[in-house]
Image (tube, rainbow, N blue to C red; front, top):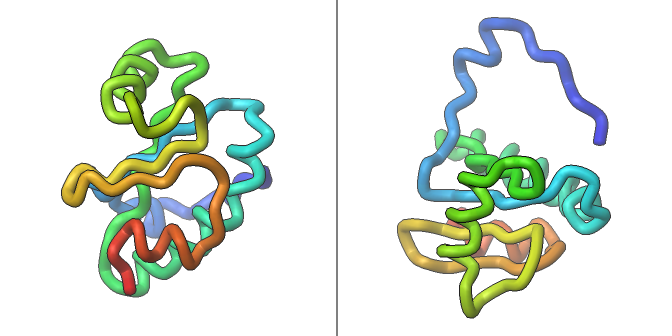
Length: 107
């Protein structure tokens, strides 16, 4: 996916929401498939004064993989996996922005 280069002032304004976790794998085709949907959700979250998803790469980060396993057990066997720590709601696999909005309690 294309990466946007942000100026310093914009970076300062972007905050992660510690309750909205996005577990993904570098090179995973389904992570790439959900990327535009995650971007859609994050635009809506920011318009509502909320932070972006907290990203957790699990293929190359053992700590994230352990955390993913704990949160995904009995729910999802892979990535992408989105977990809402506040509601315990989750999304397993690539989904549309409308589903992600429900998960993040935007609508």
